[in-house]
Image 1 (cartoon, rainbow, N blue to C red):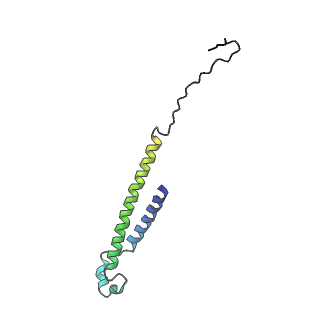
Image 2: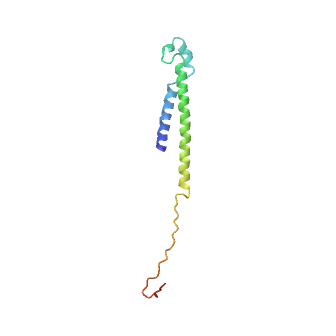
Image 3: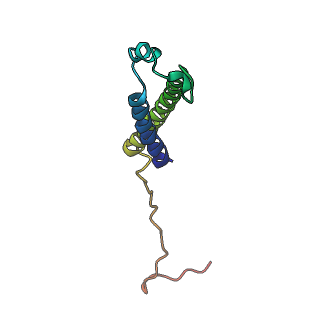
Length: 109
C-alpha cells in the first residue's frame, strides 16, 4: 500500500509541474484577445484556462492527501521501530523432572 501511494504521489507531482508549465500567465490574455484566434480552440476563448486551473487544483488536492497519507505511514513505521512491541520476551519456567538416579529411593504410592 505504501509503494502504491508513493507512486501515485510522484505521478501527481510530475503532472502538477507539467500543468503549471503549460498554463499561460495572466499577462498573455490581453495580447491573445487582439487576433490571437483563441475562440477557435477546443476549450473556447477562456475555457482552456479554467479547465487547466481546475485540473491543477484537483491534482494539488490529491497531492496534499497523498502527502498526509505518506506522513501517517512514516509515523507508524517510526513508532513501530522504537516501540517495545518488536521485542518478544519469553518467560521460561524451569521444568522439574523426577529424580532418575540409581541411588534414589523407590516410592510406591
